[in-house]
Amino acid sequence: MQTGLSLLRRSQAAVERTWTNVEDALDWLCLTWRANPPGGDVLSLDEHIAYDRGYLSRGSDCCLGYYNSGYGFVSYSVVCCPNHFFPDVPCPLPPR
Image 1 (cartoon, one colour):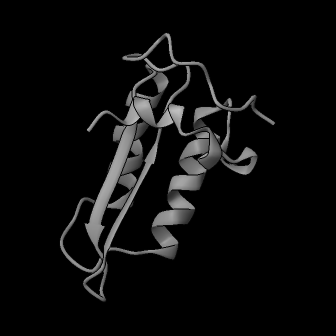
Image 2 (image 1 turned 90 degrees about the horizontal axis):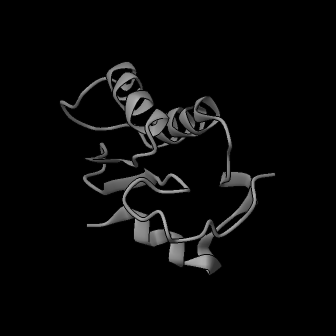
């Protein structure tokens, strides 16, 4: 899976999910996690945030995926732009 290519999906870009600050993106990850909590044994939210902060700060993407308590699979990502692996793919939206 090459998450950086999702930058080509211009119709799926949303201003309210476009940030220039890593901490703002991490806040969204926390809100999304809390709205869709895992149902089993996974890394804690704090462990994920510490891990993801390092990757996002270096221009790499982060993805989370787990089963919730209803056995549905929850998956979400934060994709950096410019992207470390796809530097020629333009950002779909300017940040707000």
